[in-house]
Image: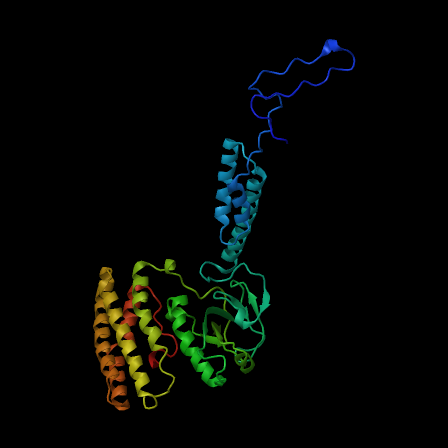
Length: 380
């Protein structure tokens, strides 16, 4: 558009129509009035919130922001007469679709695996490598538990199955470290997996008698490629296959049962993972460090048992257990300072005698928990 003339100047009138002078145009207005038509009004701007809504809707981790910006943008557009309504609606729609997809994934995870790695009930049977098993996955083996496998079959936990995954962990070592051998790696896997069972089952005494720890370790070829993952699971030895989950949640226990288990389990977590050396003669410093860990765990157990408010029927057995825990802690502290392997084993035996299994059995009877120790418990 050309610029208007300076103030005080009008445009000359256009020539009269060809059919005669009687229909001429009126004279131009006086000075100070532009005879040209006024310039067009600028188009309304595009709302910035609308643009941000659509852009943010496609940004990972900003899904709620895209929805909020779109709603705010629509409100501003109505008030200000701005453009961008389509952009705002687009941002809202994209965000809504993403939210629906996320909710569908979450719902599938809840139904399929349960919260926090819970048991799998809604899954379809499918093949999976042992390293792909998730905590809570129940599975069947193609052969026996001692046979190497490349794949297992994941099945719903309410169907008969051979095993149930409860944790993942990793073997230490750099990518260039030599393969330690299957026997040594199995020992590493046991010491890493055994303590983790208590977070999953809460009460190892309640496991069926034919259930035992089971783990998948890297093959030599996998180790050379940097694989270090260890899959921890339960499996059964003979008898009937497993049905249902072995997981126990705190919500399944009353406050006295959970109070006892939360106090006692940390001690068992240390006891089931002694040093790799078979005897204190082979690694006395390692056994002394382990004894300090046991003593510290026993101290925490006694404190927790004392702090809990027990029922009248449980108070007596718990008091007896606390006295046994205190005595055992003293012997484990002495074992940690033992001058030699012989003295260490002497204090170890004294600690076992001070804290006999029967003290735990009496508490468990009163609390309504399982009273049969798992296999090997008394040998630890």
